[in-house]
Length: 279
Ligand SMILES: [Fe+2]
Ligand SMILES: [Fe+2]
Image (cartoon, rainbow, N blue to C red):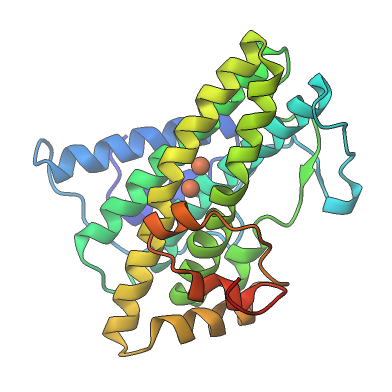
């Protein structure tokens, strides 16, 4: 593969329908990018691209309205399988989200090279997360596509396709930050189960938990960068953009420690919660 530009590479990942092929191409593209950045191979220009509004996805899983996705008893083996399947679906979506930021905004909004390094690294990690979680599913005789999954996960991307600051506010700083809030509880579910497959899941989720902090931090860093460029107050801009593009209040409890580590102070997220004030 000899991609002409980074935005072409990003678009190729978005246009790959098979989930495992998408993850593999994503990792291969990241390796090519970083080899070029280290000077081992010729420089890869950013270029410009016209990515599809919706990424290509596999025929399975069936995508259902969240209210129609069957609920399974948490703590049962079926419940744990459903949880892993839901995480695999989120990770695959995240692979596309990270390459979409590059493909959609890369050539159009000027950024220092560090912006591209951060999102390529995140995209690579999301692909690894997908591979880790699908390996856990496969260890229990299941696979990604075996269960239905939530439709509408791409909505945040579609709603912010024309607004890079809206994208950064909603995707890394709201949705991925929510991952920091809920992942410790998921790790506990598998820790309690204690069988070998659950131990593998704990290990996978611990990798995800550690790396997701950086994804939120990259979101916060580049959001603040753009606020500085436009001489805009970051907190006010964040509140305005989340109210515009995110549907509904943010749900406590918040993981204040990991959010702080990722550059998200309480006065960013608490005013957007149901209570509307810093708790
Ligand atoms: Fe992830
Ligand atoms: Fe992430």
